[in-house]
Length: 476
Image (cartoon, rainbow, N blue to C red; front, side):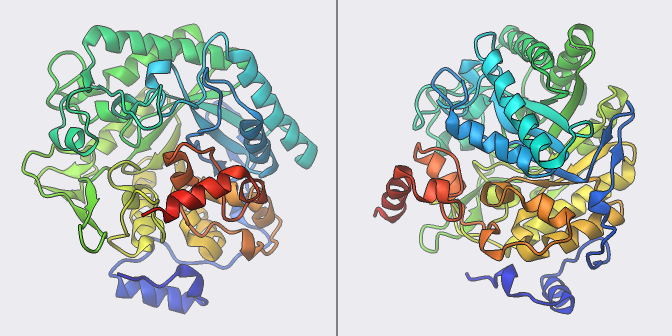
């Protein structure tokens, strides 16, 4: 199935026509860019800190650290680019794991006493590059995403899962061939992981990060707690038990790292897994009666969204004094078109089962609805990179309508680090550098190569890894 590229849509009328034909629309009117763009407006948090504009850099999983979890020159270049971007909210820029066992790949950054000085230097590189380009960092807020990969841990080999799970999931275990290797964490092991998160947060505060994100998205451990309805004991079953992990980490941080703010990146909804059709390779929802209810999915139909518990979770965040919320959806492992809409899937993925713009609209719509219900939360939105030439118009319209507070960018700043600055200056972006969702930034790490935009960034295109990537993509 072929879809018309969004780059071929040239007028607002044509975009509205396309959306109407797809049976969806944006939850706000489209506005043209103006010199007084709301994206350049500051945002004041409840603690009084003023964030200088409405662009946010999402945390992304790096594959180019050392085997013991330290940054390399590749990592440093990427973090300097985050500083160059001009965005005033940096949501970690990177997923950093709290333990070796929780690494999603053998080259993911790790936070501990040994790596802390290296992470501090990495943070300084980001801050210095921002100051060199924009003069001040007084309105720059930089956090660190703390994670444990849980079911999707690959700490020692890029081709071998070593899962740490909360419950048995027959379909996901079959899909990833982990029926024999899946280790269900005991309550005592979970309590030890909670202490690892708290210790990591203490280190993050000492290093100089201004907030820590307790990751609850994309199928990783924090997210899996939210769907652990079948798990017995203190960390499963009831909503209160399934959020005990978050509450105990927050309590520990507040006691031992009181100056550190807390954020949460949350998959606001998850849906059933998809797999490629054997003939067409188009993604199809899996057909199984034993599939367990995902968080944010309707109880009677796992292809439909139900935000009841999502609202409960955001209310809990408010009650815990957590203001910074970064909303995303789904998982890159089993329904990536929900999580990261793309025209071109990773080599090990499936062809999009819907026009990718529907995935963008789904996330924007859910974010707008939740922002309306929780106006006091500082909410970051996701899914904007796929919009390409239309990104500024939609972003300006969303912020103006108070449908979101910050526009989050991930893939776009890999191909075009200065993109936020260009938009904030009301300049025309270089179309040759816009992310076109080729997905090589995912395909390369999937085959053990370093992270980056191979099609558009000369640093990677001119590297030896580029040739390896081409061989992998064109192998039978």
